[in-house]
Image (cartoon, rainbow, N blue to C red; front, side, top):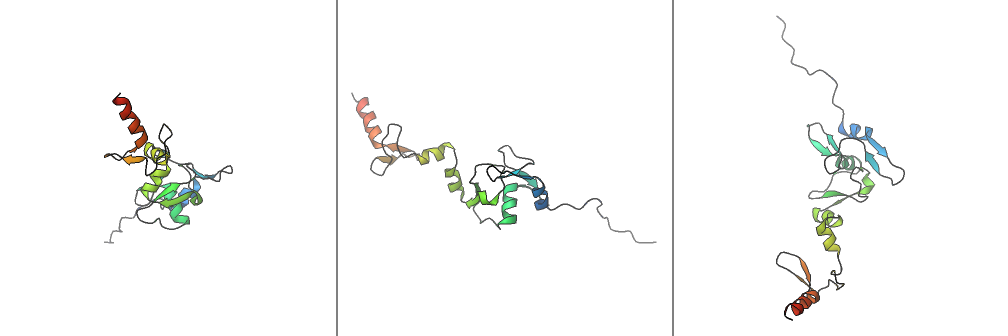
Length: 150
């Protein structure tokens, strides 16, 4: 009696994720962005399935394919601010702190402020930091105390 052949999976061979990535990229002439035309997550970042059936960000896959590995403890900052862009010239590996402070969140906006809402400068002599980490203007605090005790 002949031996049974090992179970062999039938069907097409899986396609390399990098090859699939470039099939869905559209090069924009206006701003030099390479726009991902496939699936995106809730934040607008392109996603692709890799061989291990893991979801990966397409901008990371493109960067590794064209520039090399991303340093440990670094993430890619979109310098063009277009989340679907996979152009490695528009991506820079930075720490999470740097990436957050370059953004448009409330903490990043406050960190970039150079003056309080009344126009006093945030400098070493006129600024103190509260226990919860917020910057306070000494001049405004003194003005509040004067008004309070009148």
